[in-house]
Amino acid sequence: MEASGVNVDLKAKADWVWRQTLKVYRRAPEVRLASSLSPIEIFVSLYYGGLMRFDPQNPAWEERDRCIISKGHGSICMYPILADLGFFPASELERVCQAGSFLGGIPDPVIPGYETVNGSLGHGLGVASGMALGLKVKDGPQDVFVVTGDGELHEGANWEAIMFAAQNRLDNLTLVVDDNRICMLGFTDEINSLGRLADRLGGFGWHCLEVDGHDVMAVHRALSHLKKTRDGRPKALVARTIKGRGVPGLENAPMSHVMSPSFDVIDALLQEPRP
Amino acid sequence: MNEPKPRAMRDALLERIWQGMADDERLFFVAADFGAPTLDRIRGDFPRRFINVGIAEQNLINVSAGLALEGFTVFAYAIAPFITMRCYEQCRTNLALLSTVRPMNVTLVGVGAGYSYVVSGPTHQCYEDITLMRALPGFQVLSPADHVTAGRLFDRCAGRPGLKYLRFDAQNLPVLHGEAGPDLDKGFALLRDGADACVVATGYMVHTALKVAERLARDGINLAVVDLFDLSGFDADALAGLMAARPRVISMEEGFSGRGGVDSLLRDLLSRQGLERPTLGLGVEPAYRFELGDRATLHEQVGIGPAVAEASVRTFLNRP
Image (cartoon, rainbow over all chains, first blue to last red; front, side, top):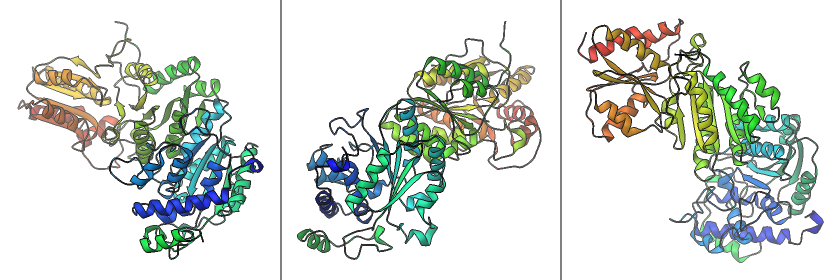
């Protein structure tokens, strides 16, 4: 489905996912809220924008496009998305982090819709590169998407994969960076600056676009363009985002990773339109 | 008897892999810029399924995991210390952990067990891998003592799903098993009988154990020598039976002693079987050293050469 053919109001869906993510936090405050609010428009574009083929009744469907969610801890917004799409019953969202639930504080591949292990950072891109290579050899038309954080790119294994993907012309691979510019202990630029990431990736031979990661239509347009482009280069979208977006005190706070907003703040937000 | 000539373990395996890749389009060979003349044939004949990731063992494992998730059978190939320790967390997370919910068939081939890269020093030598790879649930750890066993492992690895780590010597070792190879299901082979003690050795140290047994036999001391090549899936009852029939148990490994290697494996087995036997664990004294010398000299320095091993065994058996 092309961008023009999207029949879901992506902006309304992103707002809904934002509220649902707050509700998950309200029930399970162990989850990483700030990191899970920055990639909402990325996941909404991928999963509701007609960019990915998938079958909620058969998550291992061979024809599916693969999405490796490498920033596992910061993808709690996927819980309401996967439930909404029918990967599992919405009632499961009531049990996040509870004994017997498969929805943990950090997602694991026991969750229908999650492909790989994501709790440890810096693994997704390399595994996705192997999958993309395998699909090339099988002559499969599927795309492989990987969503990472920017701080996660400090892990050196990513750069091994970045070289590998370019060398092996994996133009069925798309990296989406949730570029919220904050690690656990502060701003990425003050820890290990990635500089202008798009330039770095371009220097390694990737086809890279940048976009306002909270303009869901812009994210969708960029991903649609990348999906259509197969010119021998692996592709990347650097989505400039805001960690903790929409939650006062949390938003863009250097220590937002380990901050837990009070339930009063969350309850007040849930009464109002999304900021 | 028509004994096969000594060959490199890797050559015996690579020959089988070439045939496997010719027969089965789902076989991949991924290397971390580590080659051998026999590899050129694979590279030349199967360019789409021979991948060199470069000097990048973390990505070697990650790419192998990704290919395995797409249904390919993968052999990943690098120097032993680097394919285990440089990328240990990748092995844990993307192979051992992930394979519990996503079936995979990945075989790591690590060349350079123990001191086999004699003059390259401790970075290229490997004394920790038995302990480390046995610590990962789901990994079968296979440590052959000759190229016949090494070659026979191809069918076992390609034909059965799961994760395997092959610990290969880099040198050409004498042949211990006939063309048919040992019984892979059993996981070990009794190479020499003897009533005074049961020696369980792995890899290169099987050859040392046989030398020690030969020397002691001249003084009427008789050692049984077992080649334990499957360090995770061996027939525990059968091996315990061999140990039960002898009054003492000796382990020999080209890995650190007292750090969770074959010595600990045997003591654990004895304990679980309720067998009380005095044990002697002969392994590398746990320290890093930079001395140069041939393999035999280095082995004598760290406590596993034939002479020092013989002396240790004599003391252990009260037969000085």
